[in-house]
Image 1 (cartoon, rainbow, N blue to C red):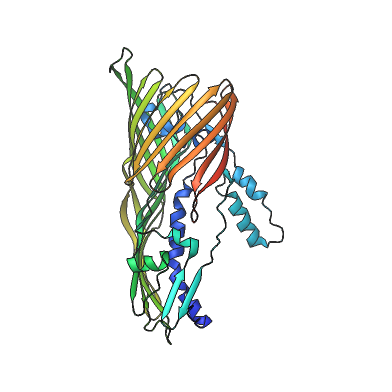
Image 2 (cartoon, rainbow, N blue to C red; image 1 turned 90 degrees about the vertical axis):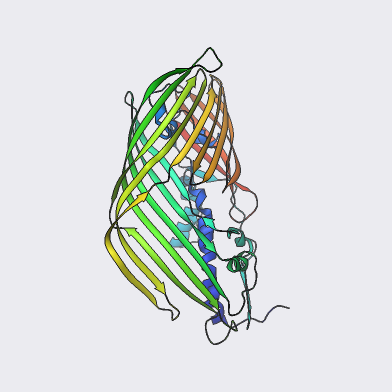
Length: 444
């Protein structure tokens, strides 16, 4: 028997229960922001390749002779798709949304988008009954705490005069988690009806920071090491110093309480929501520093290396400290607790090990990365026939599972046109999407 509907006004009031679900869906999608714009590397599963990215990751490779070095200029296929999107009959806002959706992720075109949701969000209510069914959207609600950890070390521009490496890049780091209590998780993920006169709570703490980095590094030879072969390993060590300009910092901590009425639907709100939020944000640019250290070894066509990025990374900030409270009367109270407060943030370190085999016709490569207690693996292969190249690879991480990629290229004289196809996990549905990318390889 379907419970009788409550008045429309009360249905609007209970919409606030969907807030945590929407926030979690956005956070769950966050890993898809990690976009690799080099189609050669993408076609090999995202593995580190000899060239600028490997040098930027491990300073021991500065000045080393690297096989088949790679430097690519991404072609903005997504932007082109966004500009070409069909917006006939739409107003300016709808047209902008359509073009943005078609353009994302800007340097790639989505060939197999996620199927449209086939299950509406439904709310069943009666005098003492409230059940929310998010349909396919419930898959975005995790069974346990949702980690917001994310780390990106990107090198955008670099030069290598002699034994030096000078590069400009960005560092983006977030840490924290969002957690719902078991009862609220059951209500949003499993469609369990909310109980009358019951308290539910949610907690979130997220620290995020963005910095521009000027990196200067060098490397030295450490001699040779013979291990079970007549051909010794040539050993190298490298050091890079990063000067950091902090562009933004935010530390947010929220505790929310939700209490259902008893009965749920009477003359008061069916769901009373209160929260206390603590914010600390940067007031101006911050300054800091970090170190990259690395070791590398080469023996004929074989190469291997290990490095740590952002070692002892710190940024000094000037911050404002605020609190916002929503009380049981529905009043929102904002309080400034302090301004001009000095704090020091720490950047998460990233450990990387990589290696491979490179000949005139073959390139095999693999890497493993440990950052914020998350392990990511990449592996790929490239086969060359004169001007042609074919590629394939796999990647694995705890948040995205196993993903595959293939690619190819056509080039000569250090120039090449590279294309790639890679899979990505859907947010709501089972299965994988498919992205097409392209980039122009230029001589180093």
